[in-house]
Amino acid sequence: MTAPNIDTIVSLAKRRGFVFPSSEVYGGLGSAWDYGPLGVELCNNVKQAWWRWLVYERDDIEGIDSSIILNRLVWQYSGHEATFHDPLVDCRECKSRMRADKLEGYFPEEGPHAAFDANARIRAGLVKCSECGSTNLTDERFFNMMFRTTLGAAAAEDDPAALAYLRPETAQGIFINFLNVQTTMRRKIPFGIAQIGKSFRNEITPGNFILRTREFEQMEMEYFVKPDAEHFKLVDEWVALYLEWFKGLGIDTANLQLKEVPAEELAHYSKRTVDIMYRYFPERAEEERQWEELMGIAYRTDFDLRSHSSKPTDAEGKRVNPDSTEDLSYFDESMKQRFYPHVIEPAAGVNRTVLAVLMDAYSERTNDKGETRVILKLSPQLAPIKAAILPLAKNKPEIVGMAKAIKRSLQPVLRAVYDDTGGIGKLYARQDEIGTPFCITVDHQSLEDEAVTVRDRDTWEQERVKVSDLAEHLQKRLKPFPVATPEIAS
Ligand code: GAP
Image (tube, rainbow, N blue to C red; front, top):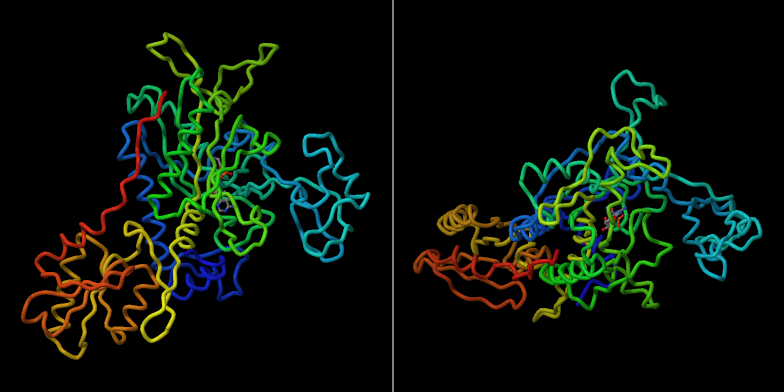
């Protein structure tokens, strides 16, 4: 079972301390969300699982953490200043602001490849507002999605010398550090550089909870290969690895789908992109409207390293990038050849992964009294809390003391909490709803036999375990699913 819709997760997330609407005391801020005590643990666990999988368990990937604000020239030469924009229109009737290229009638019947004049189509009344159906729309205008800021206390707001951007992708911080990492870590191609961090996009139509926000977190990896590698095949191989990884996080593959991105939708740097889509909208009647991008795997060619390099020249022999002071090419000893490495880029979103994991983990079960309980069947490696220690009698100091001592003894090996704020049934229900794999009950008999009851979240089965064996017992059962990490061909 998965969550019936995103709204079910929004309400659970708020009720149980995963995610709160941001700035609520001032009426909120559209599409901004704050991660609560359990949400931050879940995000950290997703990021740790990813980092462990790529940076620790493989031998061909290094990690970095680059600045969010980079030299403006990075965004000029990456192509983002010129092309990272969406067409925008306003509806004169209902005052909605929308992305024009998502509206009915925007593209001619021959498809998006055909030459067409979008504003002529809008003025002819062929394009419809997605909110009210009116065709009374403004002309389209292009809107760059990068957030602007100014550097330095004395800078005037419109001083072009002080203009800077918040990064819209973490990838560029990797490209400009390619040589630093390759030389300091003595790497030979193929190898990859991974980074996790915040990115910012002034989205025209953010929404659907944490699916599309203006501030979000990415887990990106740039994998550098030879110019004559089988790039399209490598895209397929990374797609297969990620499908395994998502499966290992507990996501049912029936809720994942691949989308070969059509040529006209490819980003300016990509020759091929395959998106892994997740069924975020199971409630929608039309199957094709149920899916949204979870991540993308792109073949970026040598576009980025070449663009940031000082040497490449155009047809007239003029330097394409007169501002760069470095040549980011690579000398391959085996080939005795210098070239700009080509790149395969798996780019995933932390927040979209968290949402998919929450939706997939959602389930309901009816207890003996006919009451419906929510159980969040999170993979144990992702569960914010691994074990809850619950005293059966909170007015009995010996039981409370023993329960608190067990919590303290488990804490160095796994995240444990102590809770005595309700009856046992209520405490179990609360832990089930936040995905805690084990509840450990300390009762009167525990004082005699030095054993506790371990209750399984998914089966509700209980077993008696010696306190001295408890840490090992839990660690064994908490082991993450093994994830395939086969080597990738160069
Ligand atoms: N470097 C390539 C790149 O950034 P992208 O497809 O634009 O590619 C990668 O972004 C991933 O980042 C997406 O698949 C999604 O998971 C996440 N992402 C992008 N925009 C987002 C947004 N506005 N809100 C939440 N996540 C977003």
